[in-house]
Length: 262
Image (cartoon, rainbow, N blue to C red; front, side):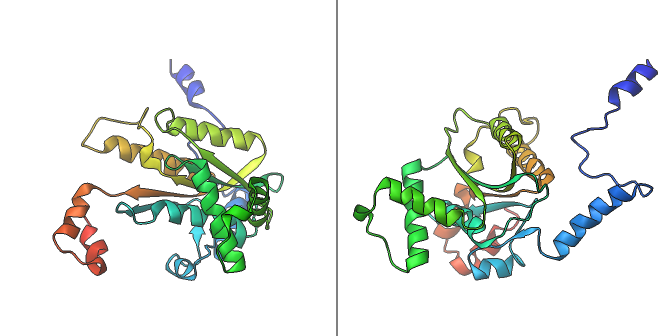
């Protein structure tokens, strides 16, 4: 029985093992030091298009980092997510882990429909480039599509945009989609998901205090993209209790501090 058990748990490709260092194996040590040098030189960071964001994040979003952005309703959560999505391929030169792959940035919406998303992106990119708002009546859909493609592909990134029905999707579907892109030869550098809280917690741990399933989903999301060294970002709408702080007179300048521990 012991012999059978020993054989069953032996697996040279254990997906749970992210890094393994054998000091007798120079190649394994070199692999980790290569990552260390990339971090030190800033190659593991993806710059944003906003200077203050780069300052407060000490140079940008880190590859492998999961960013959860909580905010109240109607506070530009989706707009910020889309803006970051467009900034990453425009202000960063792809630094590849696997040089045989193609760099990819993805935006998935469980919120707004694609016509709204594409209209926002075109107006954002046009205003950024020409410093004036476009006249939407003067542009054809084909011209709009070509402009967006050119602007987002300027540094060699491949860009994908998806609208999903959150009632029919789960975290498992998201992971399978990423695995599909990897099989097609892509290396995912950034995943912008608007927003993860819309997904059901199907397959996640439900035993425990309230919110256990949501925390488990977030952990799965973070771990999945951390292994791939993918920067992930998702807005998150904070609870209705937070609104009560505003109603009780908490000023904007101290609202974030009041949220700590609640």
